[in-house]
Image (tube, rainbow, N blue to C red; front, side, top):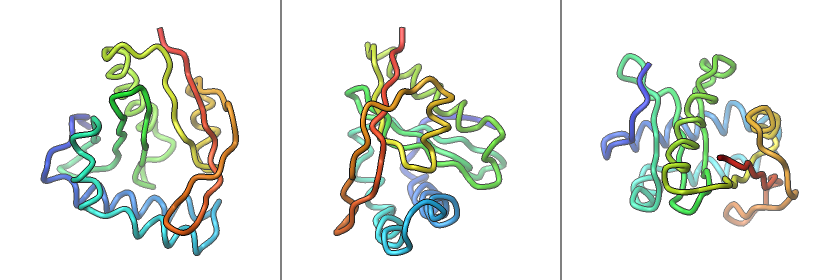
Length: 153
């Protein structure tokens, strides 16, 4: 498996993986109407238009994108999505570590992220601490999230 920066030709696969993860994994923790709005917003144009505002790392196996993680340039992890067949196999930890190392090189001392209910325990295992529970707007809905931070040295 290879982890590399995303390329322009990756956005359709990234958006498809994002929708599949929301529908297959996150749907266990959120209401169907929220999942439908959230999933519909994860489209190719949205990922393409944000490409210059972040670094986006993809995990590729057999020419297929099986995970991705992206972060802003101001010390925030935006998202981490893993193909359902790769959950629990260390891929999420590897992708997150790549993003953390990238942010550390940018000079970040603390990383912030907004976790779903689904991923909160994963992030805790990676050393993140919940600083507050919040409601995040998704279209005309609001979803429960957790603002988490991790000090990096």
